[in-house]
Image 1 (cartoon, helix red, strand yellow):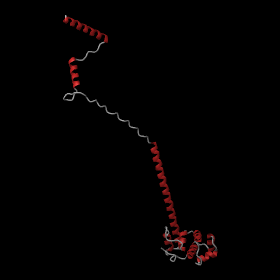
Image 2: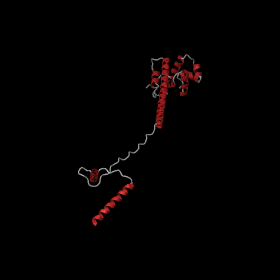
Image 3: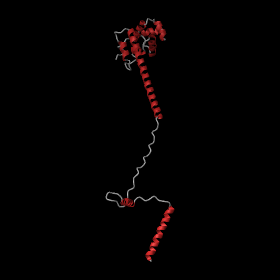
Image 4: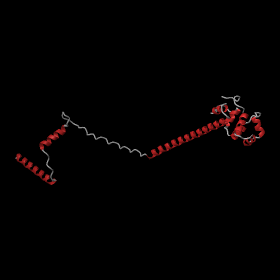
Length: 214
């Protein structure tokens, strides 16, 4: 890091910048808002300018304020000022070249800062839009239909009573045999003929019984 002892005198730096800009001492004093005698004493190293005056002189000479502060030993080599310090103390550069390089460097830094800010803003806007889209999709998706409960399977009642060796109920076997031997039952007739037939059978049976007794 360059110290204030390594840096050229700030008065000589201001004088060289003024001469390169081809303006008189009076013109620079008017533009910076200081008096002629005061500016003359600064250039000759008899007065040490304040930070405010250095800022006014930097604006009038169209150089960066940090570069002027570096020349005056008011700014440490930190926070990205190392490049400006290197430019300011480079003995192989003319004053015009140092001024141009300083302006270009600070222009690049401002552009990069604006680009970083724009990128951060765009990323934030993209995240907000994605969140809004996801919320809208969740609101428009139909709800899943409720699944009806499955009906319980019908279980045939277990057979009761004795069974055959193969597991068939005995009652079912007997019923099947009875149907086979008797044949299918005739279709029922009307109720009145059935009653008359029953009465005849009863009478015949009663007459047969009387004959046997006699």
